[in-house]
Length: 604
Ligand code: GLC
Image 1 (cartoon, rainbow, N blue to C red):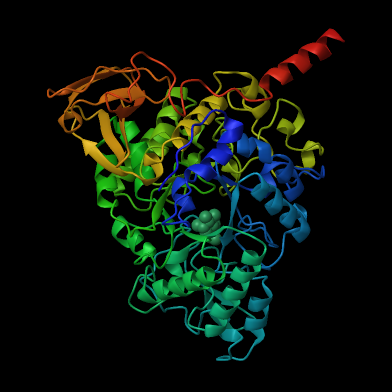
Image 2 (cartoon, rainbow, N blue to C red):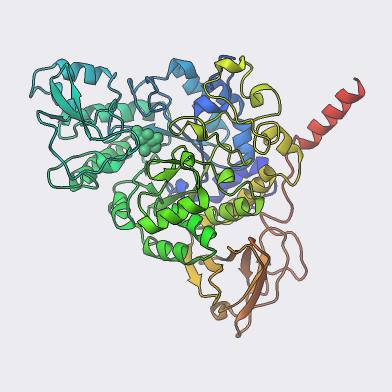
């Protein structure tokens, strides 16, 4: 049974999430009700004034994450690394990069996060290591054919596996690189300084299990599995999604299941729908996988003002094994990838969202959410409303909750990894170091720079994006159907209006999204819900009851409704605040901050 509680304030919604999801039959499905916040320790908050974010700083800033109403944090790689791929080039799997702190700092962070009800997901990057990893240094010197050498994939000719595509098209010309020490070529699907591990060697799997157990013992609640489609290579295949790769994932799942059945695996498999779904296995591989097929279609739908691409891909991907769940996202630390759309669709996306070549990388777009839509608040809200109402668990990229932008002049994907903007103060309140020592410069442009876009200012402004996001999240958290319910699209006869229901036996919500810039109307067939009364989840306003005839809906440009389809008995007789909504949640300290500031000003 699922226990519902009301969502009265953001600060207390944490405990609400925990209580609401008490589910006696399936106690380990917590991730279905979660909202994940993705962040980089390096970018979040610098407590030591060296210009680089660290675990102590992140721990100090946990309340920002709690106040947002999310329930889990996914950390980008924080392990020792030469940082030639921002930490995805690992040189020690069981440590913390000294720039970010110590293992004890990590422990302290996990403890503090858990105490605040937040789960922690870390990265498992085992498709490849850094070429500085001791395993690679040992392998290149070890005799050919030895188990040490065979930690990696070698060739004398560099001509094997030619059907495998190159992923980092802007920087690599081959998946093989020559190693003068080994006097052989080694295989790499990403940068040439990231040699791929050889999963045909059982010793590699043994090491992976050691890594899993190391972090499980430190209390992590889940692993994001980086670049999983490419774990195994075979001749005459693309080297992606092979059965052998799925066997590796099943072994990883069995290992974590034995140690901590509550821990989850989240797959990064950027593939077509038919190749992504197998990462769930029969419920015995990954608990979650990023919904790469849906992400670009959300942006396409908005650009074309047509809901069809969304409905199509969701319908194609909604049947999953019971314990499994999609992880939904709009943006992340990488480019907005367009690998898995048609050439025509990619061209359209570039034309719409990245006209300048500098805004693109490989086959994607290196921009943040706010800058993709030119800072248009309505489109930011609409995309977030889609993100939080589609079937799956939403993942929010740090800074997108305040509408941070990017710096297209920085190399690789660094432009979307700039310091978190906390305040209008020096370095955006991220660090008190001299700006020359910052790991990357903060965004300073007049529209999106930290003086205009920052947490401190937005906490104080009731109508800010931050406060709006908190409201949206609070409403979602109060309605289990968003995380667990089924989805059904309803023909509206107007392709610009996307209408769908999210239903559990005990709760039905109708979502209507106007993708167009201008007002739209539609007659929606809701006869299945005849007699029910739509009630707005935000303000509690009662709409006219649903009858046998098509239901008329009108929406202003780029707006949306989330309407609970209440029975006549449940529906309020007048418009009044309802569970989990009704009033925009006020931050507990907003008023206090205003008073303190006024006081300070009075005292000169
Ligand atoms: C994943 C990461 C990306 C990284 C790549 C290679 O795709 O998300 O940032 O560059 O793996 O490690």
